[in-house]
Length: 139
Image (tube, rainbow, N blue to C red):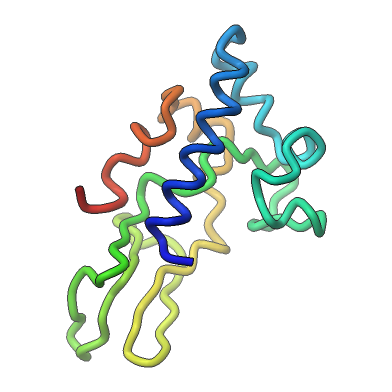
């Protein structure tokens, strides 16, 4: 699946859930996105829910920011690095690791838990997920 396809599909699913919670206060909306609650109530929100797996190894994973505002991507490639590898995604904070295969570089965020904490979500909160994520892809 292309990054942009995931991004668009996820934004749609996220908006549907948030719209149904619009009567709640912000802290309750954030709490609602707790991994265990989401797995139970919205099993199709994340493919990992079906196997009771988490994308990040953390006790209290919050799924509000599935995706991170520090992530940047372009399915056509962003730039060539010094070794002539095409970079398709990266982290502007240089967190996580890079996966290099066949002259292609993709960001590996699996060891970074920053966007899945209530503190980070609260500091970056917006009811519109796409607004939080507005810089991750080129317009």
